[in-house]
Picture (spheres, rainbow, N blue to C red):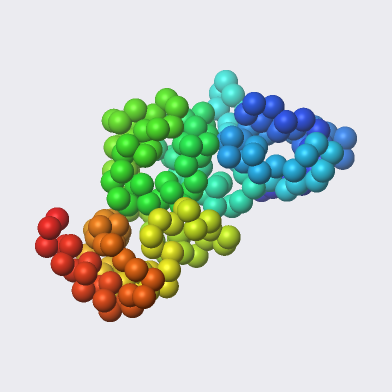
Length: 202
């Protein structure tokens, strides 16, 4: 119903922000990572929103980017993961870090979020691994370099995509690239050869 809300920040709480728009204050729940990126009270901001409707609950959840919102929707689509758990994950790791954790089968990184245990993290990996792609990371606008550990450079991206085209899964390609001690001087062909050697150890 509400794609986004643009308004003036009237209040910032521990897990929410209130945006004032034409005399109406919208209470929007949001992860800590988003709260840290908000401007000061009295300034204007636009938030992409999701209206969560249940018999006993009606709440708005908001994010500064559509990418955050997309991951939030994927998370709450998993049985047993509610909005609170989804916000906890997005407060702990960024959307791209979450994508890589899923593709690499890194349940430990996901389980660092409050209320998310190892079993739940593994369930998330199983249910979402086919819904997340490397292209989503590389095409994300303004993706922070820290979100894409050791694969943000063009040569590494090309090598990973080449592995996928050879029939390896994106998870296998990512794991292989993680194991390579690469230098900036290496081209994609060299990285591909090293990655293929790593595949033999899986």
